[in-house]
Length: 339
Image (cartoon, rainbow, N blue to C red; front, side, top):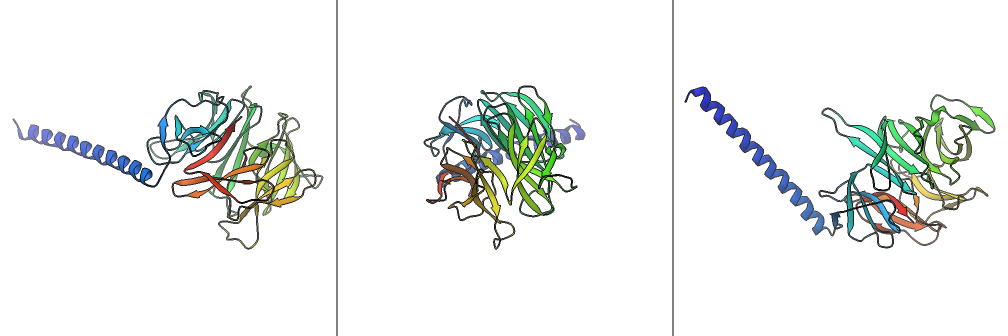
């Protein structure tokens, strides 16, 4: 055997031994993560079938460490701390209604990640996909399932400061027609058409008429609640200092985060509910800053995420400002309630 042959054999053996060692380290790390999660009292997660038509369920992104991290998982809506069923579908942001879902995903590339929005059917199969030009932030499906919306950061990565830019899109899930940016809509502010180069939109929430939506408009350092019309392609300002609105099931109130003076710049928001008929604001009992688009669990309760030990935890609080917040689920974000 020549010296060259011996060197090749030695090199091949080293490659194999390195691969074996790396595999062992990765498996040990995964086992350690699962052990640590179990010791911390983390949720039990097992693979199974998840659909968007199973009644009385909560579907959300699982953030618990382990093989099912970032997968859509389901639990009984009445017992959100119950063992979780994991779907195998990974999402960064998610929402669903009427058997239709929207899933914002990362597509991992050799150099950097890109992002896409998937429209999901009731069995979580993708029926359409669209490029997302930035880091996913918000997602919503209309009550009928007819429309889906998403927001992405295309510059910056936080709402807390002023140096960021967003892009918000709406798609007709039946026809596939895409509105790639709400910035193409005509803006009516104080009764007049408004133009500005710094306009940003985020946090769409839909009414049940397949026409009306609400969102945040930001311009000149201020934010506004706007009511949008999908037919006329217009948005009209309604109320100042509103971010990430969420329309109540009866369409009469909006839950949102509001900037409050005196709070830290990186955590400036409190949760409020706005009566759309009287424009009366009600502060909610949650004392901490909430950087999330709250979700109405029912006509009386809103649900939202706050930072937790393993990403984020879900909390609920009464929508009338009474009571106190209650943690309902750990290592969870982006919930959707299936009636």
